[in-house]
Length: 119
Image 1: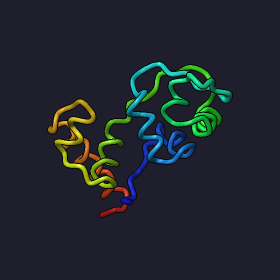
Image 2: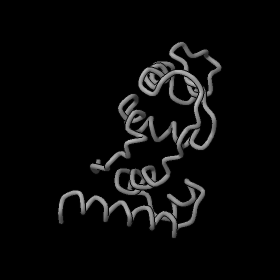
Image 3: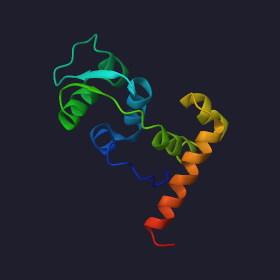
């Protein structure tokens, strides 16, 4: 797996449940209002998507209650490209955006990463 920099606003999700479940959560709920509980009901949409234990961990890390979930699309695009090997077109279809937008996200992420190491 490639070492992809996790943006600060998404780090709590990755810390709580790992990158795979964090991406699953963001894809399922990004851009919408979501409610997290440390005691989720069986019918909870988040518990159905991630499982009870991951939902509890996420609620403890991010905070229980309702909030608008970030989309995290540039981060997800980088994960799908460098960790999953998806093509730009496949990523664009999955994220409901254009291939041009995906290339832009990936390009900006690469240049930022290079600057971070001083090269």
